[in-house]
Amino acid sequence: MPHLLLIEDNQHIQRIFRERLQREGFQVTTADDGEQGLQRARELRPDIILLDIMLPKMDGLEVLKHLREDAALASIPVFILSNRSTSNDIQRARTLGARRFFAKGTSALHDVMWHIRHECDYRKVLVCAPHAEAAAPIVGALEHPRVLCSVVTVFADAIGTASRGSPDVVVLDARPPAAANACTALQQLKSSAATKSLPVIALGDSEPATQRADALVGSAHIDTDLRPIVMKLLGLEQTETAPLASVPG
Image 1 (tube, one colour):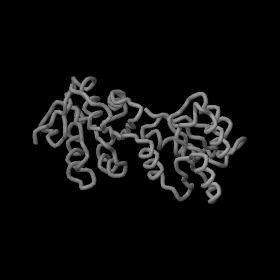
Image 2 (cartoon, helix red, strand yellow; image 1 turned 60 degrees about the horizontal axis):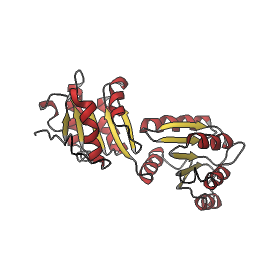
Image 3 (tube, one colour; image 1 turned 180 degrees about the vertical axis):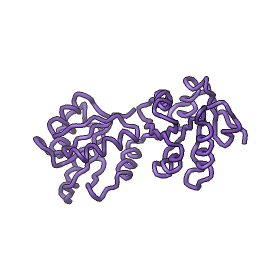
């Protein structure tokens, strides 16, 4: 799970972004001022930093300057999110090596997430399960430094979430007692123009109920077969074991 450090002093914005980033599949650590953010970057070595400019104790551009001067931190991708977005601020941030500058109030949350994901070359898996406890082992099986696992626990929301979030793969928990709801979600995903090309991996033992899935992983083989199938679809790992098991349709 990629680790993101969010350096933001506004508690309301910090909460909104932390919750959204966590839903996207990031492990999120927060810092309330520039000095604390720099300290946590040095202690934790996060995979990404999302940084405000107007911060107490040390402004964000100064934080960015210190990050770039530290050989251990210089390669961490840094994205700026700030209300202060003059041409001078944007130019200085770019000169200091910021990947992208997002202006608060005009940058939509989903655009910020999309750019972070694509510029850092992350893959996204949407996990549809009846509850968080059912999703946890699925997410655990797909742990990878370049994979974000976003979870939806209401099957009726799967089509909307997939349309908005543009995942690379969908993993659908079709085991009882959620089989009927999962089957309906699968039909919707494969019927919508926005999502019909998405690979969908179904978890369960009933082929008729999951015949439109691209692959089926049996309930007894989730720990061994799910990861290689998904990683191969994501182009992250090549394996000769657990090949794609096409579901007849």
